[in-house]
Length: 162
Image (tube, rainbow, N blue to C red; front, side):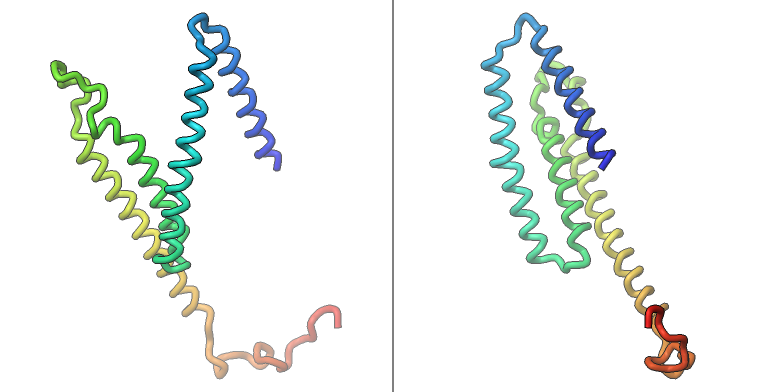
């Protein structure tokens, strides 16, 4: 709870710093700032959250329960990476007369990063399956291999409190 309170306090201080710094700007147009903030809020709540809820529902429907956390993490990570990379992939801001402004093959690089995210998700899912199988095999002994005190109702001390 202390960490949460510290994070909230840090966020409030940073927002206060931004408001004070922005209000000191002589070219500030409050109506434009409010319009921008309303657009960001609407874009976040109407587009981003709706897309995340739809992907979460698809993951819940088509992915086995034990793999859902990994699949959801991979999906959200891939979506965030794609949203950040789309302007670079589409070349927004690239002037035709200066090829050195955005010189890299951003589409290929985005595909490589998304493949890495998918590979990490598959590896995490396989590791979880392997841990689950080894935990199931390692702890179970047959009834014949148990000591008398380990068998139900047999020879051990009575439980505390009886």
